[in-house]
Length: 250
Ligand code: PEP
Image (cartoon, rainbow, N blue to C red):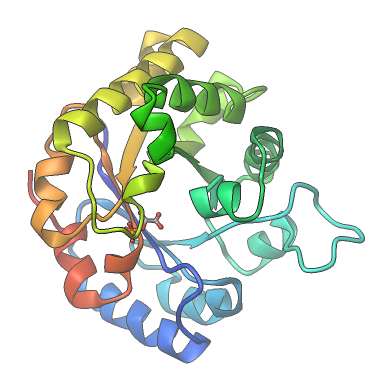
């Protein structure tokens, strides 16, 4: 039985003080929540949020990191820095990183391996664009991104990996994949894990859905056989929206 995993990606929103206030509300609201929960503030708010969630049932996530541990990389953030301030997991390959900042499958794979080597969990994001969906390539794109992202990752390391299927056309647009369409791609993703590793690895892999998840559609999406949680953007910025998603009941 896979444990539901709900993550909030706060993107480039909230000052450290605002982030701390939201983290405090979520910590109070989710104290009895049985799902795995993570919040990912921007880099500048990580420390203030770390001071709130430390010792609670909320994990701390970063939204990105560099491909290497240290060096002359102006503007980048190292896995060592994230670890040092108590980050548990890092979101990698988000569609905004892929499509706005030009991150390639190879770079994302380097980051996944580096996060795991340093004991952090990785949330590997995959998903097709609208053009790719309309030209019938959604399944092959997600399969390729999954294979590339996991290249060189051992089966033993997979318990620290979550895959987030986020159709690019559904992110921040208010459009959501239908539960059946999303489940179909989740199944393709699970089958990809099976062909790369084993049936057992595929069964255990937690695959989140992301793309305009809201309180109204959360339970229906996460009630699907292959959907094990959500990566939430916009609706994670307000406690009254994120709390009901995080506490959804199948
Ligand atoms: C995201 O940024 O990962 C996301 C899914 O955003 P939204 O929920 O706003 O579509």
